[in-house]
Length: 418
Image 1 (tube, rainbow, N blue to C red):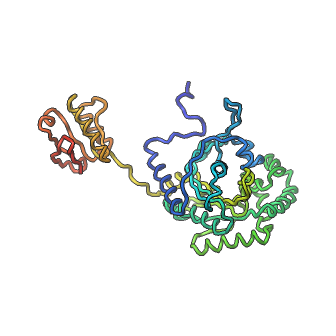
Image 2: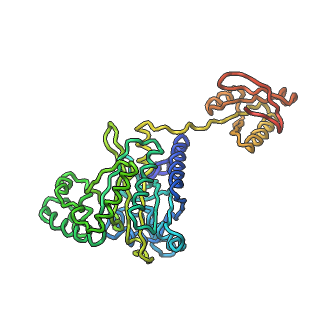
Image 3: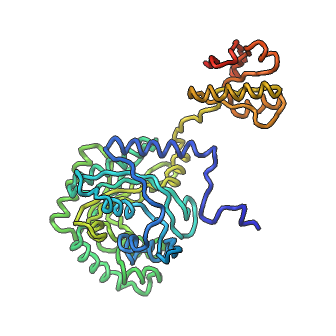
Protein backbone atom coordinates (compact mmCIF):
# COMPACT_ATOMS: atom_id res chain seq x y z
CA UNK A 1 0.00 0.00 0.00
CA UNK A 2 1.69 3.16 -1.26
CA UNK A 3 0.17 5.48 1.36
CA UNK A 4 2.22 3.78 4.07
CA UNK A 5 5.44 5.09 2.52
CA UNK A 6 4.37 8.60 1.55
CA UNK A 7 3.59 11.61 3.71
CA UNK A 8 -0.05 12.79 3.87
CA UNK A 9 -0.98 15.37 1.25
CA UNK A 10 -0.12 18.87 2.35
CA UNK A 11 2.67 17.81 4.72
CA UNK A 12 6.43 17.85 4.24
CA UNK A 13 9.33 15.98 5.79
CA UNK A 14 12.23 18.18 6.92
CA UNK A 15 15.29 16.07 6.25
CA UNK A 16 18.60 16.16 8.18
CA UNK A 17 20.33 18.27 5.51
CA UNK A 18 17.55 20.87 5.80
CA UNK A 19 17.18 21.11 9.58
CA UNK A 20 20.25 23.33 10.16
CA UNK A 21 18.52 26.09 8.15
CA UNK A 22 15.37 25.69 10.21
CA UNK A 23 17.32 25.73 13.47
CA UNK A 24 19.20 28.87 12.40
CA UNK A 25 15.98 30.64 11.39
CA UNK A 26 14.04 29.71 14.54
CA UNK A 27 16.96 30.64 16.79
CA UNK A 28 17.52 33.99 15.04
CA UNK A 29 13.86 34.97 15.25
CA UNK A 30 13.55 34.04 18.93
CA UNK A 31 16.77 35.88 19.82
CA UNK A 32 15.66 38.99 17.92
CA UNK A 33 12.37 38.93 19.83
CA UNK A 34 14.31 38.63 23.09
CA UNK A 35 16.08 41.91 22.28
CA UNK A 36 12.64 43.54 22.41
CA UNK A 37 11.75 41.81 25.68
CA UNK A 38 9.62 38.96 24.27
CA UNK A 39 9.95 35.60 26.04
CA UNK A 40 9.06 32.27 24.44
CA UNK A 41 5.74 30.56 25.24
CA UNK A 42 4.81 26.99 24.25
CA UNK A 43 1.13 26.14 23.82
CA UNK A 44 -0.77 22.89 23.09
CA UNK A 45 -1.12 21.57 19.56
CA UNK A 46 -4.90 21.23 20.00
CA UNK A 47 -7.50 23.23 21.91
CA UNK A 48 -11.22 23.07 22.61
CA UNK A 49 -12.96 23.91 19.32
CA UNK A 50 -14.95 26.72 20.91
CA UNK A 51 -11.75 28.68 21.51
CA UNK A 52 -11.29 29.16 17.76
CA UNK A 53 -14.96 29.62 16.87
CA UNK A 54 -15.19 32.42 19.47
CA UNK A 55 -11.85 34.09 18.79
CA UNK A 56 -11.14 33.57 15.10
CA UNK A 57 -14.83 33.99 14.20
CA UNK A 58 -17.64 31.77 12.92
CA UNK A 59 -17.81 33.65 9.61
CA UNK A 60 -14.15 33.17 8.65
CA UNK A 61 -12.89 30.67 6.11
CA UNK A 62 -10.57 29.28 8.78
CA UNK A 63 -13.44 28.20 11.03
CA UNK A 64 -15.93 27.32 8.32
CA UNK A 65 -13.68 25.37 5.94
CA UNK A 66 -10.12 24.87 7.11
CA UNK A 67 -9.98 23.58 10.70
CA UNK A 68 -9.05 20.01 11.60
CA UNK A 69 -11.78 19.30 14.14
CA UNK A 70 -12.63 15.94 15.69
CA UNK A 71 -14.37 14.41 18.70
CA UNK A 72 -12.03 12.79 21.20
CA UNK A 73 -12.69 9.69 23.32
CA UNK A 74 -14.32 11.84 26.00
CA UNK A 75 -16.86 13.09 23.42
CA UNK A 76 -15.26 16.55 23.44
CA UNK A 77 -14.81 18.59 20.27
CA UNK A 78 -11.15 19.54 19.86
CA UNK A 79 -9.29 21.25 17.01
CA UNK A 80 -5.69 21.24 15.85
CA UNK A 81 -4.59 24.85 16.16
CA UNK A 82 -4.94 26.80 12.87
CA UNK A 83 -2.99 29.76 14.32
CA UNK A 84 -1.26 30.80 17.54
CA UNK A 85 -2.93 33.94 18.83
CA UNK A 86 -6.04 32.27 20.30
CA UNK A 87 -3.96 29.71 22.22
CA UNK A 88 -1.66 32.37 23.63
CA UNK A 89 -4.66 34.47 24.70
CA UNK A 90 -6.26 31.44 26.37
CA UNK A 91 -3.02 30.63 28.22
CA UNK A 92 -2.59 34.24 29.35
CA UNK A 93 -6.10 34.19 30.85
CA UNK A 94 -5.84 30.72 32.38
CA UNK A 95 -2.55 31.45 34.15
CA UNK A 96 -3.33 35.01 35.22
CA UNK A 97 -0.55 36.55 33.14
CA UNK A 98 -2.63 39.63 32.40
CA UNK A 99 -2.83 40.42 36.12
CA UNK A 100 0.95 40.78 36.33
CA UNK A 101 3.08 43.72 35.23
CA UNK A 102 2.02 44.81 31.76
CA UNK A 103 2.62 44.77 28.89
CA UNK A 104 2.84 41.00 28.52
CA UNK A 105 5.27 40.11 25.73
CA UNK A 106 5.54 36.54 24.41
CA UNK A 107 6.93 34.81 21.31
CA UNK A 108 6.39 31.34 19.89
CA UNK A 109 7.52 28.83 17.27
CA UNK A 110 4.66 26.46 16.46
CA UNK A 111 3.18 24.07 13.93
CA UNK A 112 -0.31 24.93 12.63
CA UNK A 113 -2.91 22.97 10.70
CA UNK A 114 -5.38 24.13 8.07
CA UNK A 115 -7.26 22.01 5.56
CA UNK A 116 -6.75 23.94 2.36
CA UNK A 117 -5.53 23.18 -1.13
CA UNK A 118 -1.76 22.62 -1.03
CA UNK A 119 0.26 24.81 -3.37
CA UNK A 120 3.63 26.44 -3.79
CA UNK A 121 4.89 27.05 -0.26
CA UNK A 122 1.42 26.28 1.17
CA UNK A 123 0.91 23.23 3.38
CA UNK A 124 -1.79 21.74 5.57
CA UNK A 125 0.76 21.37 8.35
CA UNK A 126 2.96 24.44 8.48
CA UNK A 127 5.20 26.38 10.84
CA UNK A 128 4.83 29.86 12.26
CA UNK A 129 6.94 32.23 14.31
CA UNK A 130 4.87 34.83 16.10
CA UNK A 131 4.76 37.39 18.89
CA UNK A 132 1.93 38.77 21.02
CA UNK A 133 1.85 41.94 23.15
CA UNK A 134 -1.03 42.45 25.60
CA UNK A 135 -2.04 45.35 27.78
CA UNK A 136 -0.86 48.37 25.76
CA UNK A 137 -3.36 50.35 23.67
CA UNK A 138 -0.94 53.07 22.60
CA UNK A 139 0.42 53.68 19.08
CA UNK A 140 3.85 53.06 20.63
CA UNK A 141 2.92 49.39 21.10
CA UNK A 142 1.90 49.12 17.44
CA UNK A 143 5.15 50.72 16.37
CA UNK A 144 7.22 48.34 18.51
CA UNK A 145 5.55 45.29 16.96
CA UNK A 146 6.09 46.70 13.47
CA UNK A 147 9.73 47.45 14.25
CA UNK A 148 10.23 43.92 15.59
CA UNK A 149 8.79 42.35 12.41
CA UNK A 150 11.08 44.55 10.32
CA UNK A 151 14.18 43.70 12.36
CA UNK A 152 13.40 39.97 12.30
CA UNK A 153 13.52 40.02 8.50
CA UNK A 154 16.65 42.16 8.43
CA UNK A 155 18.41 39.76 10.83
CA UNK A 156 17.81 36.77 8.55
CA UNK A 157 19.25 38.65 5.58
CA UNK A 158 16.22 40.08 3.76
CA UNK A 159 17.23 43.67 3.15
CA UNK A 160 14.67 44.91 0.61
CA UNK A 161 11.65 44.79 2.90
CA UNK A 162 8.78 47.28 2.93
CA UNK A 163 6.09 47.46 5.57
CA UNK A 164 2.53 47.82 4.28
CA UNK A 165 0.08 49.19 6.86
CA UNK A 166 -3.62 49.93 7.12
CA UNK A 167 -6.15 50.68 9.83
CA UNK A 168 -9.44 48.81 10.23
CA UNK A 169 -10.55 51.32 12.84
CA UNK A 170 -12.53 50.50 15.96
CA UNK A 171 -15.79 48.55 16.06
CA UNK A 172 -17.82 51.66 15.23
CA UNK A 173 -15.57 52.56 12.28
CA UNK A 174 -15.79 49.01 11.01
CA UNK A 175 -19.57 48.98 11.35
CA UNK A 176 -19.91 52.12 9.17
CA UNK A 177 -17.41 50.78 6.67
CA UNK A 178 -19.16 47.43 6.47
CA UNK A 179 -22.42 49.14 5.52
CA UNK A 180 -20.60 51.14 2.83
CA UNK A 181 -19.09 47.94 1.41
CA UNK A 182 -22.46 46.20 1.31
CA UNK A 183 -23.98 49.15 -0.58
CA UNK A 184 -21.08 49.14 -3.05
CA UNK A 185 -20.97 45.40 -3.74
CA UNK A 186 -24.77 45.14 -3.97
CA UNK A 187 -24.44 46.67 -7.43
CA UNK A 188 -22.22 43.77 -8.53
CA UNK A 189 -24.04 40.79 -7.05
CA UNK A 190 -24.52 39.29 -10.50
CA UNK A 191 -20.75 39.38 -11.14
CA UNK A 192 -19.32 38.22 -7.80
CA UNK A 193 -18.26 34.61 -7.26
CA UNK A 194 -20.35 32.38 -5.00
CA UNK A 195 -17.85 32.61 -2.16
CA UNK A 196 -17.93 36.40 -2.22
CA UNK A 197 -21.72 36.45 -2.23
CA UNK A 198 -21.61 34.38 0.94
CA UNK A 199 -18.93 36.65 2.44
CA UNK A 200 -21.01 39.71 1.61
CA UNK A 201 -23.72 38.40 3.91
CA UNK A 202 -21.46 37.30 6.77
CA UNK A 203 -18.16 39.26 6.61
CA UNK A 204 -18.07 41.88 3.81
CA UNK A 205 -14.41 42.82 4.45
CA UNK A 206 -13.40 39.37 3.23
CA UNK A 207 -14.67 40.23 -0.26
CA UNK A 208 -11.69 42.61 -0.55
CA UNK A 209 -9.38 39.64 0.00
CA UNK A 210 -10.76 37.42 -2.79
CA UNK A 211 -8.20 36.04 -5.25
CA UNK A 212 -10.68 35.79 -8.16
CA UNK A 213 -9.43 38.26 -10.85
CA UNK A 214 -12.93 39.52 -11.68
CA UNK A 215 -13.73 40.06 -7.99
CA UNK A 216 -10.39 41.84 -7.53
CA UNK A 217 -11.27 44.17 -10.40
CA UNK A 218 -14.59 45.01 -8.75
CA UNK A 219 -13.00 45.39 -5.30
CA UNK A 220 -10.47 47.88 -6.69
CA UNK A 221 -13.25 50.48 -6.86
CA UNK A 222 -14.62 49.82 -3.38
CA UNK A 223 -14.62 52.55 -0.71
CA UNK A 224 -11.49 52.88 1.43
CA UNK A 225 -11.63 52.10 5.14
CA UNK A 226 -9.45 55.16 5.75
CA UNK A 227 -12.40 57.38 4.80
CA UNK A 228 -14.48 55.87 7.61
CA UNK A 229 -12.09 56.17 10.54
CA UNK A 230 -13.22 58.17 13.56
CA UNK A 231 -11.02 60.99 14.91
CA UNK A 232 -9.41 58.76 17.56
CA UNK A 233 -8.53 56.03 15.07
CA UNK A 234 -7.16 58.55 12.59
CA UNK A 235 -4.92 60.05 15.28
CA UNK A 236 -3.78 56.59 16.37
CA UNK A 237 -2.82 55.71 12.80
CA UNK A 238 -0.97 59.03 12.31
CA UNK A 239 1.11 58.46 15.45
CA UNK A 240 2.08 54.96 14.33
CA UNK A 241 3.33 56.36 11.03
CA UNK A 242 5.23 59.17 12.78
CA UNK A 243 7.16 56.64 14.89
CA UNK A 244 7.98 54.49 11.87
CA UNK A 245 9.31 57.54 10.05
CA UNK A 246 11.41 58.53 13.06
CA UNK A 247 12.87 55.00 13.28
CA UNK A 248 13.72 54.95 9.56
CA UNK A 249 11.50 51.95 8.84
CA UNK A 250 10.25 52.02 5.23
CA UNK A 251 6.48 51.73 4.92
CA UNK A 252 3.53 52.51 2.70
CA UNK A 253 -0.16 52.81 3.47
CA UNK A 254 -2.15 50.08 1.72
CA UNK A 255 -5.93 50.52 2.31
CA UNK A 256 -6.78 47.12 0.78
CA UNK A 257 -5.15 45.11 3.59
CA UNK A 258 -7.86 43.32 5.54
CA UNK A 259 -7.85 40.31 7.82
CA UNK A 260 -9.79 37.08 7.59
CA UNK A 261 -9.93 36.76 11.38
CA UNK A 262 -12.65 38.65 13.23
CA UNK A 263 -10.57 39.84 16.18
CA UNK A 264 -8.50 42.45 14.29
CA UNK A 265 -9.03 46.19 14.92
CA UNK A 266 -7.11 49.36 14.05
CA UNK A 267 -3.56 48.68 12.81
CA UNK A 268 -3.07 45.75 10.43
CA UNK A 269 0.04 45.14 8.35
CA UNK A 270 2.10 42.93 6.07
CA UNK A 271 5.82 42.80 5.32
CA UNK A 272 6.68 42.62 1.62
CA UNK A 273 10.07 41.63 0.21
CA UNK A 274 10.95 43.18 -3.16
CA UNK A 275 13.42 41.68 -5.62
CA UNK A 276 14.00 41.56 -9.40
CA UNK A 277 11.58 38.61 -9.37
CA UNK A 278 8.78 40.77 -7.98
CA UNK A 279 7.18 41.23 -4.57
CA UNK A 280 6.52 38.48 -2.05
CA UNK A 281 4.66 38.73 1.27
CA UNK A 282 6.96 37.33 3.98
CA UNK A 283 4.89 38.32 7.00
CA UNK A 284 1.23 38.07 6.09
CA UNK A 285 -0.53 38.13 9.44
CA UNK A 286 -0.13 41.09 11.75
CA UNK A 287 -2.23 43.61 13.56
CA UNK A 288 -4.11 44.78 16.63
CA UNK A 289 -7.00 42.97 18.27
CA UNK A 290 -9.07 44.95 20.70
CA UNK A 291 -11.83 42.52 21.62
CA UNK A 292 -10.12 39.13 21.73
CA UNK A 293 -9.49 38.81 25.48
CA UNK A 294 -12.98 40.10 26.27
CA UNK A 295 -14.48 37.60 23.82
CA UNK A 296 -12.72 34.80 25.71
CA UNK A 297 -14.15 35.92 29.06
CA UNK A 298 -11.45 38.29 30.31
CA UNK A 299 -11.49 41.98 31.07
CA UNK A 300 -11.15 44.30 28.06
CA UNK A 301 -7.44 44.13 27.15
CA UNK A 302 -5.73 45.42 24.04
CA UNK A 303 -3.41 43.13 22.10
CA UNK A 304 -1.23 43.27 19.01
CA UNK A 305 1.05 40.78 17.28
CA UNK A 306 2.11 39.06 14.09
CA UNK A 307 2.93 35.64 12.68
CA UNK A 308 5.37 34.66 9.94
CA UNK A 309 5.06 31.47 7.91
CA UNK A 310 8.48 29.84 8.10
CA UNK A 311 8.11 27.77 4.92
CA UNK A 312 7.54 30.89 2.84
CA UNK A 313 10.25 32.80 4.68
CA UNK A 314 12.84 30.04 4.11
CA UNK A 315 11.90 29.80 0.43
CA UNK A 316 12.41 33.56 0.03
CA UNK A 317 15.72 33.48 1.87
CA UNK A 318 16.94 30.64 -0.34
CA UNK A 319 15.80 32.37 -3.54
CA UNK A 320 17.56 35.58 -2.50
CA UNK A 321 20.80 33.82 -1.59
CA UNK A 322 20.70 34.69 2.10
CA UNK A 323 23.63 33.23 3.99
CA UNK A 324 23.11 30.30 6.33
CA UNK A 325 25.76 29.21 8.85
CA UNK A 326 27.77 26.22 7.57
CA UNK A 327 26.82 22.90 9.07
CA UNK A 328 29.27 21.74 11.73
CA UNK A 329 31.06 18.61 10.42
CA UNK A 330 32.28 15.66 12.46
CA UNK A 331 35.45 16.87 14.20
CA UNK A 332 37.16 13.51 14.58
CA UNK A 333 36.49 10.01 13.27
CA UNK A 334 38.06 7.11 15.15
CA UNK A 335 38.78 4.35 12.62
CA UNK A 336 39.44 0.96 14.20
CA UNK A 337 40.71 -2.48 13.13
CA UNK A 338 39.73 -5.44 15.29
CA UNK A 339 37.43 -5.89 18.27
CA UNK A 340 39.83 -4.54 20.92
CA UNK A 341 40.54 -1.45 18.82
CA UNK A 342 36.81 -0.95 18.29
CA UNK A 343 36.20 -0.98 22.06
CA UNK A 344 38.97 1.58 22.59
CA UNK A 345 37.60 3.78 19.78
CA UNK A 346 34.17 3.72 21.43
CA UNK A 347 35.73 4.74 24.76
CA UNK A 348 37.71 7.58 23.19
CA UNK A 349 34.66 8.85 21.30
CA UNK A 350 32.76 9.01 24.61
CA UNK A 351 35.59 10.96 26.26
CA UNK A 352 35.73 13.46 23.40
CA UNK A 353 31.96 13.99 23.43
CA UNK A 354 32.06 14.71 27.17
CA UNK A 355 34.43 17.58 26.30
CA UNK A 356 32.05 18.91 23.63
CA UNK A 357 34.00 17.53 20.66
CA UNK A 358 31.97 15.92 17.86
CA UNK A 359 33.29 12.37 17.46
CA UNK A 360 32.16 9.24 15.63
CA UNK A 361 33.41 5.67 15.36
CA UNK A 362 32.60 2.57 13.31
CA UNK A 363 29.19 0.97 13.96
CA UNK A 364 28.99 -1.17 10.81
CA UNK A 365 32.05 -3.46 11.01
CA UNK A 366 33.53 -1.80 7.93
CA UNK A 367 37.03 -2.34 6.61
CA UNK A 368 39.62 0.38 7.24
CA UNK A 369 39.33 1.52 3.62
CA UNK A 370 35.54 1.77 3.90
CA UNK A 371 35.85 3.66 7.19
CA UNK A 372 38.15 6.24 5.60
CA UNK A 373 35.68 6.66 2.75
CA UNK A 374 32.88 7.14 5.29
CA UNK A 375 34.96 9.71 7.21
CA UNK A 376 35.28 11.68 3.98
CA UNK A 377 31.51 11.55 3.49
CA UNK A 378 31.08 12.92 7.02
CA UNK A 379 33.57 15.70 6.15
CA UNK A 380 35.48 14.78 9.28
CA UNK A 381 38.29 17.20 10.07
CA UNK A 382 40.54 14.53 11.60
CA UNK A 383 40.87 10.75 11.59
CA UNK A 384 42.63 8.60 14.18
CA UNK A 385 43.43 5.05 13.05
CA UNK A 386 43.49 2.50 15.87
CA UNK A 387 44.82 -1.04 15.33
CA UNK A 388 46.65 -3.63 17.40
CA UNK A 389 50.03 -1.86 17.00
CA UNK A 390 48.52 1.48 18.12
CA UNK A 391 46.94 -0.21 21.16
CA UNK A 392 50.28 -1.72 22.15
CA UNK A 393 52.04 1.63 21.94
CA UNK A 394 49.14 3.57 23.48
CA UNK A 395 49.67 6.13 20.76
CA UNK A 396 48.32 6.70 17.29
CA UNK A 397 48.52 9.26 14.52
CA UNK A 398 45.99 12.04 14.17
CA UNK A 399 45.55 12.83 10.47
CA UNK A 400 44.21 16.16 9.20
CA UNK A 401 41.82 15.41 6.34
CA UNK A 402 42.43 18.87 4.86
CA UNK A 403 46.24 18.86 4.72
CA UNK A 404 47.18 15.20 5.20
CA UNK A 405 49.49 16.22 8.04
CA UNK A 406 49.84 13.70 10.88
CA UNK A 407 50.69 14.23 14.54
CA UNK A 408 51.07 11.75 17.43
CA UNK A 409 48.09 11.44 19.77
CA UNK A 410 47.63 9.53 23.04
CA UNK A 411 44.98 6.81 23.05
CA UNK A 412 43.85 7.31 26.65
CA UNK A 413 41.86 9.73 28.75
CA UNK A 414 44.28 12.51 27.80
CA UNK A 415 43.57 12.31 24.05
CA UNK A 416 43.98 15.75 22.55
CA UNK A 417 42.29 17.07 19.39
CA UNK A 418 43.26 20.49 17.98
